[in-house]
Image (cartoon, rainbow, N blue to C red; front, side):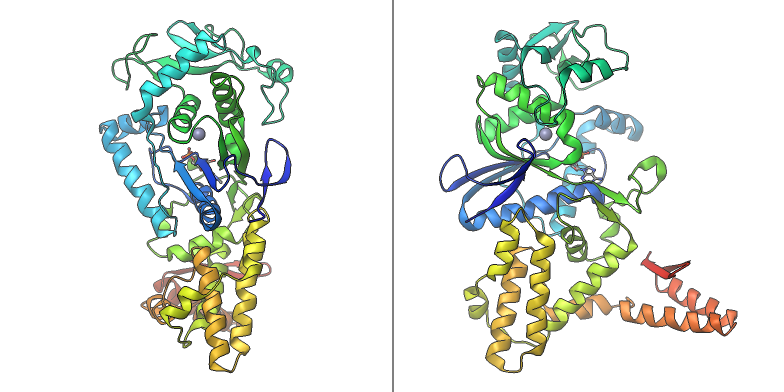
Length: 458
Ligand code: AMP
Ligand code: ZN
């Protein structure tokens, strides 16, 4: 395997070599379980699932994706709902796994929960204090960033500039503004555990450091997460872990997915533009959402709009359309190799858009093929490529029938929009309005713009 990955620490694409030949360890920062996952949260789960699938072809992979089940946002959600914390976290862990499963995300090998690793965190914090990297102050324990030389290496920040730029009021118990919390006190109404520093709870960063060490070891091959986690979360994880392990590297490759925005705007609850996967799945097949997420390179920002779904839907219609009516035996499917072009694209820093383009070029050849054998072998290759990418797992006939059931097709919608446009041009506004209502009844909302009409399923 000649895999190349873009490593955030080195700031460039580099050849991938695991620490131990033939084996790979990978850790992905998972969800904080206080709400349903939104489409942005689904991006790391889907793109790093694709990486895991690729790695499993050549290596014995151990993939851990954690659950952050102790956090101030969870405490706030529990107060707001008037429900115990465990009820909140259990509900959203299940919802997360169901939603990601519907997007074709395979379960990780290990799914550690922060609350089940408090002893390991306390041990790690004690070691940091003993080695002179952390200090206790007013029932808090803080990491002393001035005790290391390379703080800021991952996020390319300069510690002196960070200190100079920190305008926020600094907590009185901190020696320096950038020192971060390893342990903090809890009041009796908040979750807490006994510790040498009193009853309290861990800081977010130490949670991942402890879970990585316990399940994957001192040095792991790949550490992944969203771009927003580079600083402070990953910078701090790296600082803690390498200090505990006497300078041993923490992660050999750092991978970060770009951020997903909504119609050019940051997704935020206050703006009311958060799309929950759970809600989306009520009207959109998970495979469509998966393809829409993989249709952009993982490192690039991805601007999500109604069109992301519609174009992914059309793409799947084309792929399944090429496969429809081609009989491929189970045997032929099992024997088919994933086309080299797809492997090459994915091995080049997980270039999923290029891999998808290869699926299309196979579909094009399949549409042109006339001989039965040629059709069967092209279809088998298309299925094999799709399987690696977590796509094309449906039966083509079922895809179309399931999709048409009570659901207007994209073509039908476009045709109605065309008819409405003609009606408007002819000043037949009643007819135009009737078509708009017909679309609304079918669950399709349209919007007129200067350069045309867009639509989305509501
Ligand atoms: P959280 O549940 O907030 O801890 O986030 C879980 C994962 O989703 C982390 O890897 C985040 O970096 C990632 N994430 C959150 N919002 C977005 C977004 N809008 N686009 C891409 N990734 C995101
Ligand atoms: Zn983490």
